[in-house]
Image 1 (cartoon, one colour):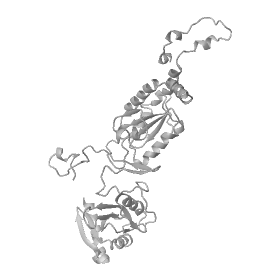
Image 2 (spheres, rainbow over the protein chains, first blue to last red; image 1 turned 90 degrees about the vertical axis):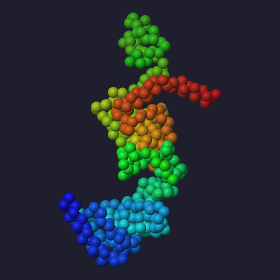
Image 3 (spheres, rainbow over the protein chains, first blue to last red; image 1 turned 45 degrees about the horizontal axis):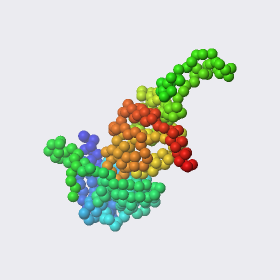
Image 4 (cartoon, rainbow over the protein chains, first blue to last red; image 1 turned 120 degrees about the vertical axis):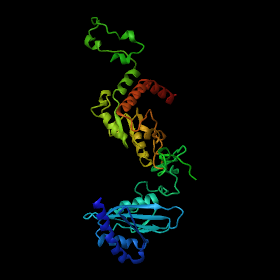
Length: 197
Length: 190
């Protein structure tokens, strides 16, 4: 546990430098169980990523993911997980994106961003500006939906692309079967069909 | 092997050990002659040399590999010749989750296999989509290609796959291949 505390302290020491570099680009700072998260404005995001890579030594991009806060504005949120290899720092950067905005690509900083950004585009439909090859990575080119959006049903929607692929609607039979974390008994926590509105 | 082929003609099958009445007869060869129906002989050959096309798409493929390996050893059934070319395969074992992205590729491989051909849906996913009630997964390979044998399990043990293959053998045994061909021929030329 002592190493975790040290790493978290090291990551924490980077935050003043970022605060200085980004000024009002930082919306809020969160520390939870030794993990540091910076919520940024979308305008400050590319600068923050470049600063982390070039000045602070976060040479590894662990993951890019995205959230759909369906019903909120801005709707989407980008999540970048950064790491440094020598001293094992870990920093998370988040930025909210509205539906008509594009996120500046991070490929010029980390090559790893290529496929991660394509996956975010494929599943969530958030476009990236400056990406050299922004096409679908899991579904096929021409598939009309973004399946991880909250307004897309788990069972799917019927589509048809002759000679390429088709999709149908999966029978859910009362499902989807979801867990209820935090419920009192195991019987209530385990996966069951719960009615959705 | 003759007991496999026992047809109506069982009295005729008893080989006679008489002196050849004609010089062209060779008693050694004649002793090895069996009488049967063409269908029975063809079915016997087909069912004992089923060459599988391993369509391993998920964890079922691990069990499929175990089935082929020495512990379970489907070469006992003449099935050890896994053919990765569909042109040389007889039975396609769809082992695993068929996503919509993969579905048409599976169909294409199936179409490339020459007749006669059979299909085994191995495991819950290939049979029905399994636990993947999802936008990405085909809900059973039988929506694209005709399935002869379904094997339950997630994944099925090698014994289950072997039983599925034996069920397929029983099915092949009852086919009327030449009769069907003859009927098709006469219907075409009627």
